[in-house]
Image 1: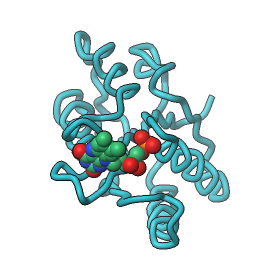
Image 2: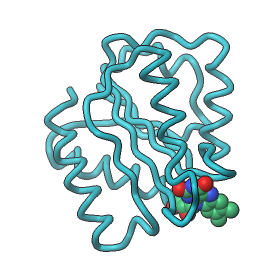
Image 3: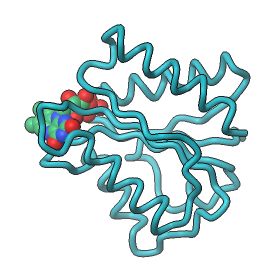
Image 4: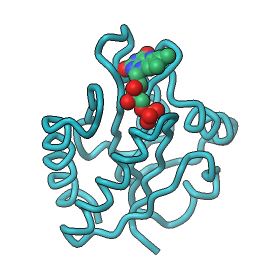
Length: 152
Ligand SMILES: Cc1cc2nc3c(=O)[nH]c(=O)nc-3n(C[C@H](O)[C@H](O)[C@H](O)COP(=O)(O)O)c2cc1C
């Protein structure tokens, strides 16, 4: 079993692409992470012995996480297991033309860090526009390289 689980929510595939890119970069640095779409995740995934979680979602609907991630949040929000001692990294895809730029990442941080007690180990990354743009690819690479030294 990998030490870290990356859970992503994505409607048009941008965050999904970033999730697998992050997995590839971390693998180059010797870190195996498991990647799962939020649609396939529930409470059980958070209570398995992962030592960390990477939570990734785009933002839609005036600041909400992508619907697949939002449904995952609904499935866990009645029990909210403790994430004390778990390493958390958060990633968002969005568009700065919207008022709530990457608003999903704030919702995710409030729940997984502030309420469930996970330990945020790196500044959240906000990807503005198409992830394939050169500057975004560089941003993603730098972030993932840094993250590799902070997770198990
Ligand atoms: C109708 C619509 C609403 C959106 N709302 C927001 C928003 O509130 N905040 C934001 O940062 N981006 C917003 N976006 C931009 C998307 O989050 C962005 O295109 C993202 O890369 C999509 O990623 P995904 O394919 O992983 O879902 C919106 C896009 C559309 C088409």
